[in-house]
Length: 142
Length: 135
Image (cartoon, rainbow over all chains, first blue to last red; front, side, top):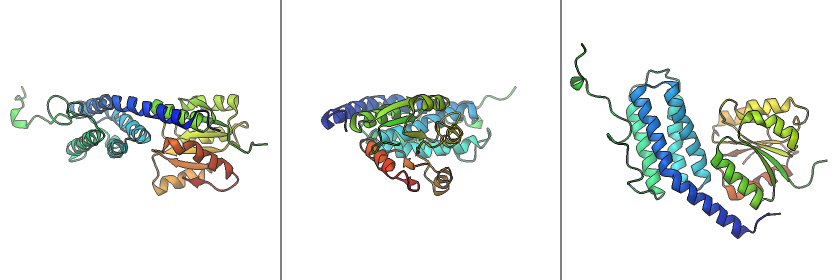
């Protein structure tokens, strides 16, 4: 019934997996950008929906491509973004910390799947989403 | 009369990565003829034109989820009886219960193993007169 000899199928599958692996760092950076936008610009649907969509796709596709650890780490990030959509712009207490923890977990999973530390380095400015400027360092309101 | 073996599948899946690997697995390994819809809105027309024996339906898609699409397909004479298999990462008991109320042929959890996808679909096809199966 098979249209291709199994060996050729295995080779095609391995090629697809290599291609997916080569794009993993880019996907992680995209998730980072979305998370940073949420923290910097607001916990609203405009920012959270792309984060949920990316995490959803990563959770589904990474597992199918054989990157189970990445899939398992992306799934709770997707669930978190979905919950956050229900907050209607007002993040729950500890939300930023939780988001940072989930992003670090995703990074660790990517490293476990073979990505280099350079490929999984957090964005400039720190690990995970930017932290708020402490009140005492903010310029005084005019 | 439906054939003994499954030969024609319509895949409705918005994620291009999953489409690629699922089509490879179903066509190259399973010998199936597969038509793909990237957007749920394309599915009714594609199903009428392609006349699949089975529809493989992603549950979470932007704009229209799998259960809503199944309800639409059930209202069309051409697809009212076509067996549908859901593919989903949402497999909590209450979610599975919701899917089963819609009487799909089966539910395949995501992530699935591509190498066994075609054989799983064949097994579901062979037991299509029996109640829904969760793989």
